[in-house]
Image (cartoon, rainbow, N blue to C red):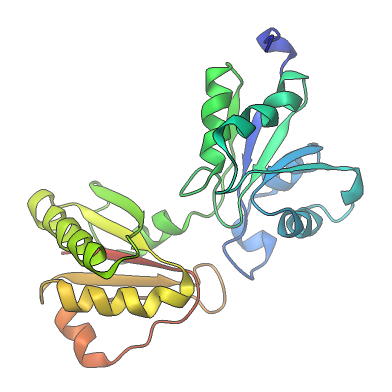
Length: 241
């Protein structure tokens, strides 16, 4: 592919999405709408929900006039190259994830990486990130922390991973952050209570930024005595001291 001079290329904007059913004004600064309103090419994780989000963000936009390309967990690495075509043709492109910030636990990172390789300017916009919001609210160590995303599916491997991340918590004073799909929240919670030390503290932050937001911190011993059922909504689990 022939790469045009940098001054003839578009810029790649990382457009934050809402974390749940909440108002635009409560989660996103006006600049996000202003920039999105001037972009016509989008790379999205799911086209239908991205169209709804843009209409919510920019009510006057004619959605059918916009271009959408999908980048998700099924996109092959050699397909990412084609997503750079509008950028190389001089058009700005916006990445939109299903929730939160593009590139954070999100396939959008693949396009960001390729943009850097091509010398394309990448511009992240301010918006909600569930990991950092949960960390802020946990009271755990915010100077040393690790986000590990999803744990292995197989039960034995999951428990081994939980033991390993708890060791890192105590050996390195490092807050550990994990997550799972909403319908597996309860399973993960019960595994943490089974495997972790009695004194380990666990923060559960669910439905962040929405009216159903819940953030609770207790030791494993305290959680065991409470008989809590974790909601089937997006949640972040943090292990701390």
